[in-house]
Length: 95
Image (cartoon, rainbow, N blue to C red; front, side, top):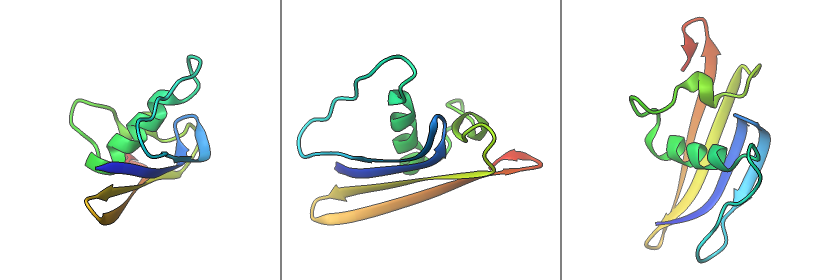
């Protein structure tokens, strides 16, 4: 599997951001609080949804936002696969 592109919309510290992964190995580096973990959590959410015992929707959705989404594009073999997952705030919490 090769990651191609990750788009975060109202996810943690990101209002709107797209990360394009180059061929080869990618290294996320930056100061504390710069958003490295948010990129990884966004990819995890796109692939697996919410995993019991991991993180909650309210910790993933940007503070003050009513909705958010993650779109991940990856390649398996010769097949490009887009995955999109959304979040929304409701009276029951973030779902």
